[in-house]
Length: 413
Length: 126
Image (cartoon, rainbow over all chains, first blue to last red; front, side, top):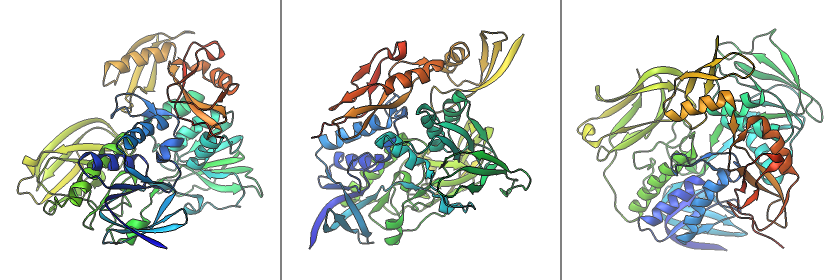
């Protein structure tokens, strides 16, 4: 039986982005917000991130993931917002109709506005083309984190980690504390893609070596992983013959990037940015399909959850306004990424209000200026002592500076 | 004689790159630091040279709850050198659900004075 339902704002995903979007949509007056989450619990990936450092910007204190999530869950429940848990959106149409599978029933939900907050999944081994056998013992870092932190299961005893993103670094420390021997962390790039503080706290503190410009080029073991072979890579990231080294281990954790889960986004015909693999949005976080908004890690991968929550709260507010029929004119000003900038979010702005532009730089650097120009005229210039691709940068552009302009460009000078 | 060290400040996500001068010898003393964006970085660098402190997050076993473990954190910083001993001591504890965020479950694990608090609500089941 197909059940038919309607709602004002449908939020897909119950992690930090979905929670913040649903709360703010309710707070600005939308009384029929429905949040859809496929897991049993709300909170998303924060549930397994038991380390601290969350909430410094938003709450002014260092919290662990579950504590951060609980603040939003408490607020969400206090407002009486409806959560459909153990429910999965199977289909999203351009007309904002969702097909939801929920504990044996199907629901067709017609929403006035939709917020996409599905987050990311991890890149698996299959995406890396590492040659060798296919033994057990190879996990994504997040899967291992889930086993250790939520199920009290240890993936192995002797661990190598490929990828120095934050999850990989955090897991190096976590596995060490749980009694495993972490042999080394390998990074393909000449610099770590994790936050500098995590290199210090997770690797240096425990004497774990980080091998830069190095990748796994061979897997050894039949039933269980026995060793990994690694090689140095050249500047074009090709393994250099003769530099092979073998590390004995029973476990290899992969922390090699996140893939925004945009299957539904694509299904709805929404335009995707080839750099972020997230939707192209305007400064209301609205995608190319009117009434469908996107925020959080499904839009672009963030460094800190604080930014996810703040961005999602804004998206939720705009979605609620749209659902109420309060719609602004088209966002006609293009935002381009210039020298040293990989992408900008949003990609278009309306010019009617101040806008915060989030972006990432392409390579580590020191003592540079971040510059925004409007039709070639400089409107923002800020110094940065240190630039790093792992850190998301933000610049605010004033509405007054946008008058009459047709394009903005963000660059590193 | 002084020794030059490079640290990454861990006080906040800015992760300032600190250039630190310390005295040579068995117990190095802090002399000076540059590269910090705020005074907290300076205090941290001095502490880091003379007695590095850390907080840790880990799990403690639970019975009768919806999860087999509950996440906990140290509310007070502990010497880096004591981190593993504290972790081992917490491994010996078994808690009974229900548990609530903020509940203090130990105050001197492995003889190190520091409060350890629950960071997740675990309802009782069954």
